[in-house]
Image 1 (cartoon, rainbow, N blue to C red):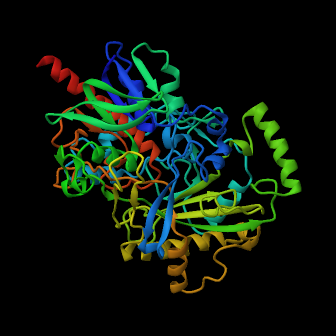
Image 2: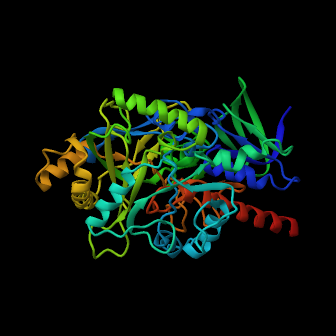
Length: 537
């Protein structure tokens, strides 16, 4: 029996969960959500500190790899991506950051009508339930719980004292009137547990009769007839099935897999598709182009403090046992850590209008995405470049969904990115060497021998990688390389939209999870308006 739904959503990540939840609010609309991974409700998701288990492994994680990066001395980069309901919001560091108002105004200035800061702010507000901040920038009744960290870590005070000593402004809200400054991040937690997009939006509504959720469902392709998306071919429960969409197919598989599924469905650069023997349904040369990400460098220090940092030691183990007991009782303490507890936004040059660097201060030693293990207790500090000029691509290696993707963020492909990061390196090192932080250190693990600008360039090329914010591969716009229009409709194909981080024309100045949730909230309004227009017609 062929199944039909009004909407089919491909991808149960942050955007897909929002879409499934909001569209199924109308009992007269049937929704099917397809997720390639599992349920996303295990303790490895819910316990914040357990994210360290998913990041370096394939637990709820696609664990992709890039092609060799010319700008990184030929190294391959690592690209973790969520593989369960909630997507990357089930494995990320849970930091709640929206980006800078200038990001959205720049999108609008490029012809993306309806995407200015003032126009997207209501969608951030309606998604958010902030436990502390009540003002015109924040929501207090949305599905997504945003709270202050509950780790009670005294290292926060050290970090803030160092920031003040270096002359930086201290902020307790990076999503309000100002972004520039340092402080402690707010996180997407609820009662000290992770609040993934699935927990916020989807899990409370799984009982709805009009909502069907398939996990372990691998989408092969979108079925396109006469330039119209009519359904999806998907493998589920050991069978390849065809399901039909009465209204629209919504593609929310993320910055890597949304372009992949478009191309496997015959939408993309016709020359590339023909190379893989894929029938061309629509020539769209921008599919898979404009792929980019925040390049990121990490400082790491071993420390004397075994009580307030993660690591392996006898006193640390005793402390951790107590912390586990405390977490079970109170949902507070180190087990509620998102690791990247502090940070903020700086300018590499005072002449810049807005910050172009973001710091993530981590109460653990991080080396190669936690894939290189250090027993010692430590702290780390990421510095990432927020507005990289380098652009890369997502390409197919074959015509099946199982064929590996050729991911090329082209990190440091533009020399200006490298020079901006050199400045970022110096500023971050200066902060981390402030006496109030430096007195904690036993050893500078990575940068002790770095003296000159040339040394900095070399260590950047040897150690930079992603900070997990890939975007842009199905760009929204009105130019010849745009994939979707400002209503997120795929050019040349009816009843098909892309709704996820891939539509960002340029990456936002900050973490990408909250913006993806906003994009999906706005998309729901666009879909409802399209529905109304159809009913009138």
